[in-house]
Length: 568
Image (cartoon, rainbow, N blue to C red; front, top):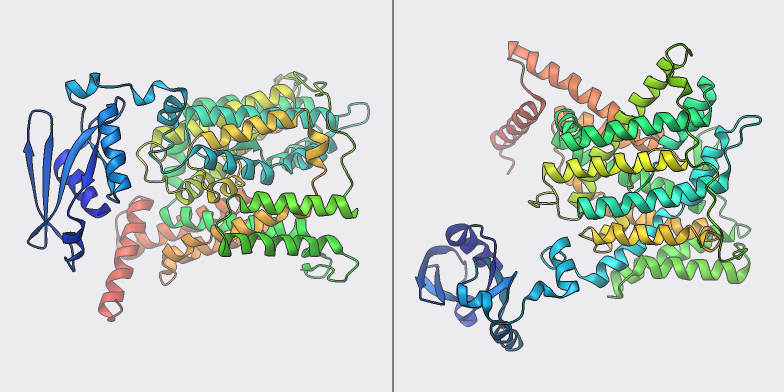
């Protein structure tokens, strides 16, 4: 039935601003057709109605009758009739057509209510979601992102120097407010289920590579963040970021990046849980499995609980339930400290403390400042290009005309740039699209409402940080592992029998978790991909082609070889 509706949309209706409700009749006739195939579509129009007859397999099986506009103006009579059809067990589908004049004035407007306007703006119903699902997804994403409130201040505070302390409490305030601002911005501008927070990796570069190695102060580092944020917002708005990413990232690399991020997420989760620990001999090894490490067993029990809820029940919010249960058990048994308080006053001591003294050409630091800016910008572009591709694909929005288009991707880059500028003003490292957004997407988030919920929770956490930061690492680690499993599916779409495509994908997937760097793995994959691209196109004196053309040619050659060998 859904296939029939899609066929009718392609063959007859096209794209128009309104929608009509189509009621599917003759369901019994449909079940008698063994192999439905659309043979003919015949439309009979009247003054205020239109009947569409579809013939499948030589038999007229279905008829569609327009029942009135669904959007933006819906007649009360038509909606009531449509509800009656649904109660009788018939199926309703949405077909594109403009409302008639009498429908436009018959009854109240569906989008006149506040919820109706919100639904229309974020396309909640159109993308197959609901308000409770978006709120639940936002809560899940926030819980998996909440670790940044503890980790980011711990890393950035190490950029302090004698007599110039970078206070952790002020960094915590800057972290939460930057995440709140970024999430609300991308939710309103792009309307996609992607959340923003200060990026892991970029905060390490801020502290260890920029401040400690070059001798720059944290105030000068914040000015570099400010400039890089401005550049990212401008270049993103102009489409330069998306252009660079599209030219440098081939399809198989985009799929590999999704898988690599999933492995990386799971690896971090195993570390946080304590199942994987550092080793001086083999770099990593199995953690302490003795009974003296009860936190590990709490994490394993929480993992089993969430997996059972996911597979064996239909209870919504499985990961949120599991995290709350683990936290409650840890607090009750003394495995984790109870919150020392419930409310804290935001600390703004690092706000507007950035210094542009290093940009003085006579100061000797201009080269260092420019290199730092370039690194921040390009790392953010490569990181976000792969992340947003993978996450939108996970949400089923990659081919969506709105969420997956170039304009939306440009707004994603611009939103992140604006969040970086905002964060530099308050006192934190550059922001990126959080890979932890996938936890909310797996929970069902499909619209910009999800990051707005995340933003509101981050805003509230500015005042309730003691409670949220008391959540044990085992509780937030389990969703990372489970989400990593969900991100493995693109691996099946990579042609592993074609070395031209397999080697760059393999390098990307392995380098991201093994180097603990998303951008490091992406750059390594790009370099190998371009090397093989040049080698392939210069083979036998072939003219130089673009990377997408080379990839398409490689895929066609692989398919041809499979056909010649009799492999279907």
